[in-house]
Image 1 (cartoon, rainbow, N blue to C red):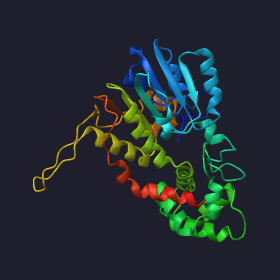
Image 2 (image 1 turned 180 degrees about the horizontal axis):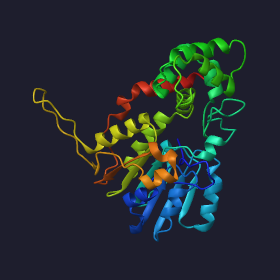
Image 3 (image 1 turned 45 degrees about the vertical axis):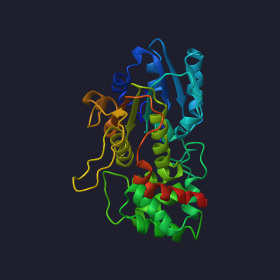
Image 4 (image 1 turned 180 degrees about the vertical axis):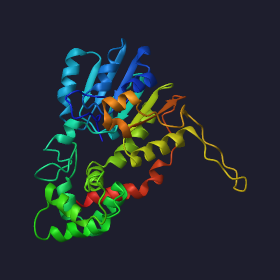
Length: 336
């Protein structure tokens, strides 16, 4: 769930860059955390402003190369950590004035085309999908979990309508041989009841496996919770999402921090929680027509942001309960 989607050209396009900079206002200085350093697009732009510092995180060790280049240019203003963003609370931030925390939940063209990662259904060889600091690969998932478990992963993480038959055929085929990337593509195509010629048959299954392998649900939820805790007063939490499931999580979390739930007059009165965050916009910010022309893959991007209104470390949100079913499915990985 790291980095920014870019087009097939060599040029790198940090999605919604102008909008991110407008939201976090680095011209006023302060320390920012770029939770998905990737190619460094947001970080480089922030560091153009004086009196700014950036801590760049990425679970993908390949981003360390980008981190070293930036660190050479800004030795006193940039620090790279090969860290999952759910572990934000492990950073030593005693004297840091955290003014903004940014998440870009897309994948870069470089990552998608990396044959070692095996994120693409066009890849050859073993199923992998590990972004870094993982416990297991997609190969282990496909070749070891039970049929009902695979079906759940495809249904809930990929919204795959043919999850049941795809899971059944995977388990049937793996009795004969180890399933690699192209074999999985063949199984999916054979299993699909209806063909959608606008979207590749394997898209949803590969998305589901990637989410499961990288524990993207619990990573995002815990990353959001820890970000909300360590932000200082007037600090900004900004998140760019690319698919409906992650946007649903971000939207729910932001609402839970910035609003009290409406209570029926027929229910017993309860003490309303203290609201420590403000959500300036109800609707997400989306790419401009100009950006869409330059970088078509940005079309699914949505930017949401919160402003912290008090220096409280403790936060109140029922987000873990809300998405507990998805976290339980992720926990099937403990068997591997």
